[in-house]
Amino acid sequence: MAIFQDLTIVTGNSHRLLANEICQYLNISIGQCEVFKFSNDNIFVKYNENIREKDVFIIQSISTPVNDHIMELLIMIDAAKRASAGRITAVIPYFAYGRSDKKDQPRVPITARLIANLITVAGADRILTMDLHAGQIQGFFNIPVDELSAVPILADDFNKNGPTNSVVAATDVGDAKRARNTADILNMPIAIVEKQRLGNEEKIGSGTLIGKVKGLNAIIIDDEIGTGGTVISAANILKENGAKDIYCYVTHPVLSGESSKSISDSVIKELVITNTLPISEKQNIEKLRTVSIANLFGEAIHRIHNGLSVGAMFNKTTI
Image (cartoon, rainbow, N blue to C red; front, side):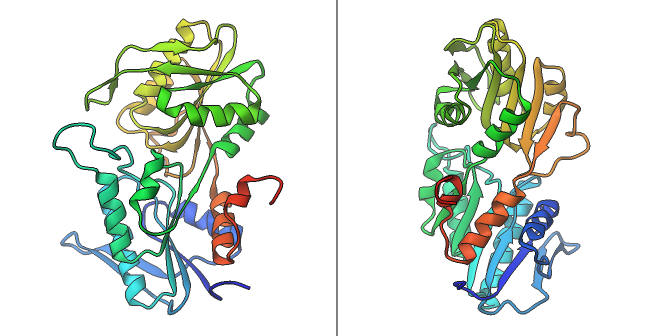
């Protein structure tokens, strides 16, 4: 028996393709909701169906243009609240501003906390997201947060399509846990690239390697790829230490600026991403391959709607 008898899924303009794929998994039609801009650049939202007392899931990945899509999400939540929705879940496959999760310099904001506050105050009752940049971001919300992980899906893809005789590499010490989880699934050793980030310029300085990679293929695992500087630097260090083919598996393909060209010209053999963010024609390079997470989000929405365990999705003994 469902907590709420009626499930409604709507989406903004950030990633309609993913929203449609999620609805296909659930075998339902996407909800009727207008989201557009007036000529004065103000965003307008209107639900064109009755959502009173319904279980409403608003799918909005915070993709480029980031600030527009944040405002769309906030206004959609507010409109749903004022339309007397029974429960409002913000489904945010990619949570932007995640790198601003702590005050690591004088006189800087904690923007991730600010965005969490805005979403909560707008009227969201819970959050469904994937691979937050830092675990403490969950604690920025005063509402329930379900954080999905792409690691099992990415590890399964490498198990099916990647080479044997490989090692899992973390791009820095902070990402070692993600690399360890992947290595445990694949039953592989782990290596860690210790990097030095240069201020706020999104550039990476020198780095050293912890672990053995000589004569092995390497799989770099990371939560997000922006300019590509981190993974390319890590790949170069792995090559310098004798690694063979290098694969990069990333959850969130931000791929800003000239990152796609940089990756094309790098030693990385293949970049495997999920579809938490849309990919433009410029970003869609030959080395790029996408693994869909739509079914994972669809199953999570089904479980939340019906009051079932979301964590059981990642426990093979209880699915």
